[in-house]
Each structure stands twice: as structure tokens, then as C-alpha cells.
Length: 443
Image 1: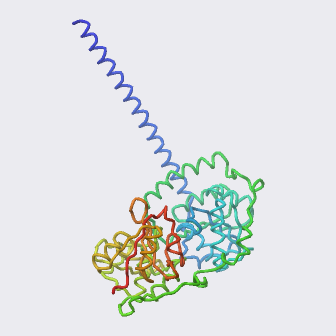
Image 2: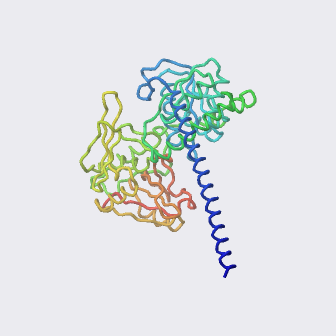
Image 3: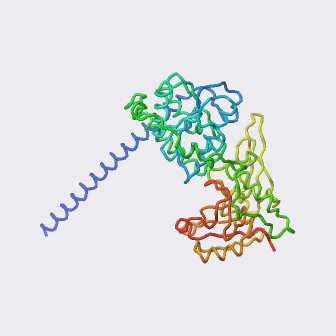
């Protein structure tokens, strides 16, 4: 009995000791997290305070004075095209160059990123001799400090999104680079909070880089210099072709399978080919822009917009969630900044397909991305239809507009991963095991 009581007291004391250890561990972890958050907040304020004065936006470029070079930091690319953020930066640099506000453009990033960026600029008729390439500028810090070292005494415009403006200016100040940030924002992002949090913690890394490297590059341009443009880009004319001048495939044809309906396939396809590789400023542009693009094509083809079209005077974008609304409108304010009103069905893929099937009665057919599936699909599809690509888990990954039919193939145009007359049956079957066709020409 006495032995049992002693054993119980021992177990109870042991449990209490474990609880104390756990409690102390939790308190230590909480203190570390709190300290980390506090340091991040201080670092964030330091970075934000480095940007003083009025911000420069792409829309106000005409008010700027000339500088030497526009610098474009790299970001992710989609196969062989710049992603939405990268394209915004390149388009702004192109605008600066064509308005004679700079005499050259420096693209910086990884080898793959700079390859794609150079190709994009060449296709927009920027001369080869006016393009500089730094394939070792693998971060914003490296891009700016390497540019400061290589371009000593030059003045620059740094083209990036407003979210990254303060950090970029902080780096330029520390590297003693005479630069101004041009905020390139023309589009709306899919996950703004996720992007903000990434930048919030990146500010702490920025402070750390400056403390360790004192505003000097990690990899000096004296060791690894600026790279030349790949020779195939300067000799192969395919890199100099724009959407409007690109030749169509030999077997390409556009046929309106139902010319008596109110959907003009030729006008929809003409719009698709015009804006496959660029954005129409009359509509809002999004990081993931494929559904928005297809809706624009259908509207250009004569499909009527529906719903009460409203635009906010304070917010740049107002989205209607009503399932019966399908529209997109815009207006310009006194500062020449565009405000947009659109509906979820116009820009969101799931809502788009639901609207066209349930509200308007169009039919969606799906097929396996196999030889047999492609054969069945080819027999039912037509120019002006909408192609829908599915991930391996069955979710919708991408959509585009069928821009023409060929001999046992079809071609489509799309945004996000920009495509101009790309072969539907060349689509990777591992990445997209199924695809669908929304039949737009009602019989």
C-alpha cells in the first residue's frame, strides 16, 4: 500500500516536471517567434522609409526626363514566354525606350529568364545593340549591385511592380546607383496577400544582404561579366516576329460553322490573334488572364454582355459575383488612371463555364488527350470554340479560343501562357490528360 502511494506520487511528480518543461519550451518558442515578427516589422519600416517622394507610374511616363538605361529584373517565365509580371516590366522598358527616355535596356535574371526576355524585346523591334543582358543577376540585390558596378556613372529607370519599389530603391541607395523606380503595375494579381507576405519577409533578407555585403555584389561583374545575346536570337527572324505579322500555318483556315447565328467567328478570331501576345487596355489584365481573354474574344464576336455594369470611383477594380452577370467595362479618372467593372463569370474559369452552360445553354464536350480522343474531338470542334485543358486531378488548368482548323489539327490563342495559333493536339498529354470543347456555334 505504501509502495503504491509512493509510486503514484512519483508518477505525478514526473508528469508535473514534463508539463513544466513543455510550458517553458512553448514560452521560448513564442518569444523567438515574437522576436522574429518584431525584427521583421522594423526591417519592413526601414525598407519602406527608403522610398521618399512621389511614386512614378507607367501611366505618367510622359512627364519623365531622359536617363541612360532601363533595368528590368527577371522573374519566372512560362516555357518560352515571360509571365505576367515579367511582361509588365518589359512593356514599360519598351515604352521608355520608344519614347526616347532611355537609350538601352538591361535585362537581368537567370540564363533562361534573360533568354526569354531578350527574345521578347527583339520581337517588339528593340534593336539588338540596345539590349544588355546580365545572366548572373539572379536576385534583385544582385541585379542592382551588379548594375551599379558595371554601369558606374549611368542613370537608370528600374522597372518593377509597386510592391517591390521600396526594396529596389533601398538597394539602389546602398549601391550608390543613380536610379528611380517606375511602377509598372497594369494588372491585378490572383493572390495579393500571398505576394505581400513574401515581400514582407523579403525585406529582412534585404537588410541582411546589405549588412553582409555592404552594397557590393556577391558575384562581381569583374569575375562574371554581362552576357551576350544568344547568336540564334540575332540571326533567326522568328524572334523578331510580332502577333500581327506572324504567318499562319499552311493548313490554317477559319470557317464559321453557323453563319446565321449572332456569333461572328471571324471577328472573335481576329481579336484573339491581335491580343494573344499583348493586353487590351480597355479591359483589366490579370496575372492569370486566360478566361478574361476568352471572354473578350467572345464579346468581340458579338456575344452580348449582361448585368448591371458598375465601376467604383475609389477602387480600381470592382467585381460582380452574380452568376447571371457577364460583362467588363472601364473608365478613366481625372489622373488618367483606369477603373474597371467586371463580373466573376467574365474572368473566373469555373464561373465562366457555368454561365455559358447553365445561363446560355452551350454544350461542353470532354475528351481524353489520346490519339482516339483527339480524333473524336477533331470531328466535333470548330473555329471560335473554346478549348478547356484539365489537370491530372480533373481541375481546369487553362482555356483558350480555337483560332483555326487545319488538316487533322486545330490551333488556339490564349493568354497567361501566351499562345498564338498553337496546335491543340500538340498539348502535353502528361500535363493535361483531358481537354474539353465548349461549342460556341449553336446549330
